[in-house]
Structure formats: structure tokens, C-alpha cells
Length: 144
Image 1 (cartoon, rainbow, N blue to C red):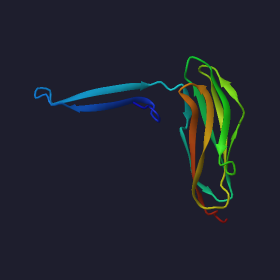
Image 2 (cartoon, rainbow, N blue to C red):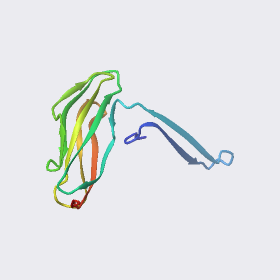
Image 3 (cartoon, rainbow, N blue to C red):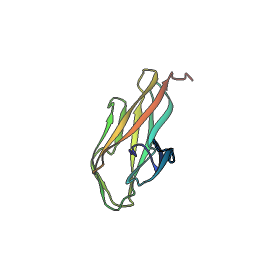
Image 4 (cartoon, helix red, strand yellow):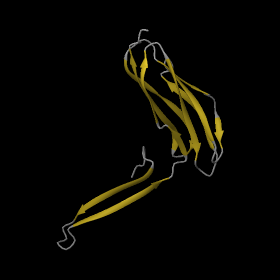
């Protein structure tokens, strides 16, 4: 059972039909508690409407909820022409420690829905990369 994209709890049911007249359908229920080691808030950055030719900033907070240090070896933003993140160098989060990243979105002149993502490369065995999606709707600049 994949827990990708889930936080807190995940419940699933599996229905098994048998040829046993007495058993009929057997239902197996599974419940998983998702223990998130590296928490990212917000998990998805929606900047809403941004005027063409403007810059909008947002903050991303990382929190180490685990019992061991988490190493972020690389921070990248794509496409580089519209999204930057600071700081963009490697760092370590001790258990319980948080860090804020400043995301800058440069809307450019093209109107419409646009976006990209920020990638964090980690030393967590089952989570080598944490991807944070970024989205905005670039609208025509309002004249004063």
C-alpha cells in the first residue's frame, strides 16, 4: 500500500470474493498511521492570481518530525526563469528543528496558468526527493 501523498492516516479495504458458500465476500480492512519525517508547509504552493510583470513571495516551512537529523543536500527550483528559492544551499535539520525557505515567483509577461516546483534532495532512504509544487495564474496588470 503506497502512502505517497498522504498524511496522518490512510484506510483501505480489500474485498475478496470466494467460492465458499458460507464465506461469501471477505473484507480486509487496513489502516496506516503515516509518520511524516520531513513535514513541508504548505505542501502545495498556490499563489493565486499574480499580475503580469510582478514578483510574489511566499514562505515554505520545513520541519524535522523524526528522531534523527535530516540532511538536505540540494535545493532546486524549476523553471529557474520564474521560480527561485532561498537559501538554496545544503543544510541539516536536527530533530524538532524547522527552517524557512523564501520562494520568489517572477510572473513574467505571459498570461495564464503557470507553475513549477521546488525539489529538496534528502538523505531519507525512502524519500530521496521531496517535491513541492508551485502554481499561479498570471493575469493582466491593472492600470492605475
